[in-house]
Amino acid sequence: MNSCFIAENFIHGENVIIFAIRFNLGILYMATISANKELIRLRDLSSAFSRSAFIDVLNFNDYSHFNWLASRYGILRCATYSDLLKKSYSVISKHYRCEYVYKNELIKLLLKKYGTRNSVYFSEFRVGNSIADMVMFNGESKAFEIKTEYDTPRRLDKQMDDYKRFFDKCYIIIPEDKVDEYCDIVESTTGIIAMSRNNGRIILKEIRHAEQNERFESEALMSCLRTEEYKNIVLSLGESLEGVAGYDMYKYCYQVISKANPNKLRELFLREIKKRKNNTALLRKYPMSIRQMMLSLNLPEDKANKLLEQLNININQA
Image 1: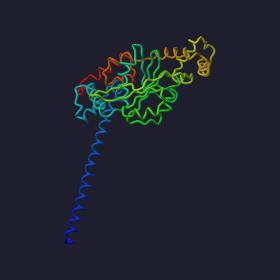
Image 2: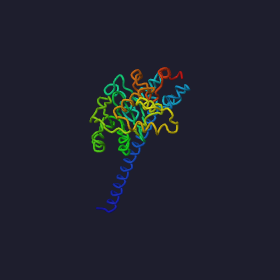
Image 3: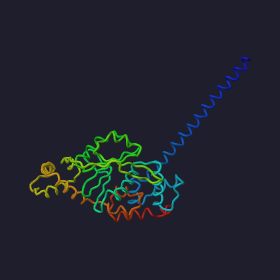
């Protein structure tokens, strides 16, 4: 066979391989660009549920962030800002299950299953050096820690240890495909709730029930209470605050509380917590997409109604 013919075919074959490699790299590059653009879009849509965007509307009639979203993403063409938020939530709940989605869906579960008419919920509740994503108080106290598909369990041990210093029951909420991973990480006393989808609907399912926590540390309890609250507890325990200097108040109250019966303390603690301004009773009247935001803002009913009215105006009228 002619050596020139062989060489020409070799070069041709080499060129075909190079072309194929470049072509595939081009496809990969375009796919990466497309994926990055989609991620940016989803993050932008999730930013609709930022406290600052809602506070700007409530306090200053400033709709600039919502208007930016409406103009940037034609898919969100909606009549009102409430429609825009509903549409944004529908998209991110399907394709970008960030912490806001988990919290919002957890509220739905608490209202349906775990809570009672007398329950109160708080978002972002400080316990020692940790902050629980959601807590619930009724006849007992429950703490919920969320770990989305975008989170790692790096701090989970410390967080759960803080919560178990006085919460009756503790849960983690995780993606369904990470159940096995977290079952190997958390203590068997920790409850596990998994998020999944079924026919387009988000479902939160309790995989493992939380066991009653027997620990009850006064220092952890004090870290959750405001000054007036722990003073009220001391008074309810039959002790006097007369003559106690302001700079000695915390130390004195801690000494009293640390000696009290844990069951009595639980009762008094729950009573004080339920006195706090809280809009749990109003959550059912809010649109589902913004329940977590309304819980976080914790507005009085008149201000909450004002915000709802502001969100219900036509977008081109703002």
